Amino acid sequence: MSIYEQLGQDNGIRTAVDDFYRRVLADPELTAYFDGVDMANLRAHQTKLLVQVTGGPVQYEGRELAAAHEGLDIGSAEYERVVAHLVATLTDLGVEPATIGDIGAAIDGYRDDIVTANGHRG
Image (cartoon, rainbow, N blue to C red; front, top):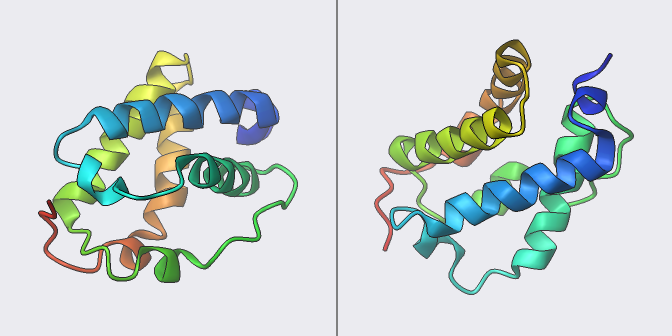
């Protein structure tokens, strides 16, 4: 069974993305990164990206991650906070720790495209 199937396919991933962004936007260390961002559009793009990277059908047609994060001055600390929110979201949804580790490993492959500065925006 793919990670995509374990997460509940599109609907399960959409639920995870909604909960994830609820947590991220409530984090005072991260909220400034989303000022002026069309969150409905971002949620839709994130859902499609996660569907694809977890073994679902290819649907993502957004910008490359490096281009999407360019100029945001995201540092390692912010990256780690976002990952922690994702882990908490998946844990609360009952995802197995091994699966969470697999998802984390897949996402960490994009770390250099996302972390571009020292961070501490706001």
